[in-house]
Length: 158
Image (cartoon, rainbow, N blue to C red; front, side):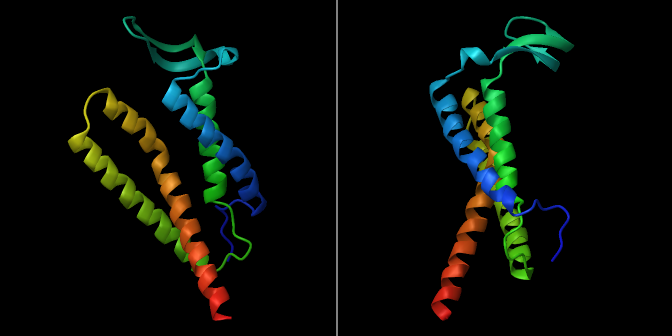
């Protein structure tokens, strides 16, 4: 099966090497509020509004890019892990990939629906930040779990 939208299989290893440290850094950054001082830089922004100041459009601002770097690395790593070909990419894998993606979207939006109903204030903003990553996380977990489970069944049958 040839799918032009999938990365080569080697990208999966690179993706894991990016994703795992980025996930650990993300946990540290979100739980402790850590920002590396050496990651402060002047960056271009489309829209910027800081507390008690006016909104700026299309300008340079001084900002700490720790969150930006960690989030970007997490997304790049998760996309590489999620959308890299398997060594044996067949109809089963294609169906598993599709069902896992559909399943992750459903679970993500059920969680988002519950958040809209039960979470308020700044906690809701935190949930929305995490929500950016949950589709990829749920997809990776489900896809690899079903793939692992099916490989165990295949080995047991031999």
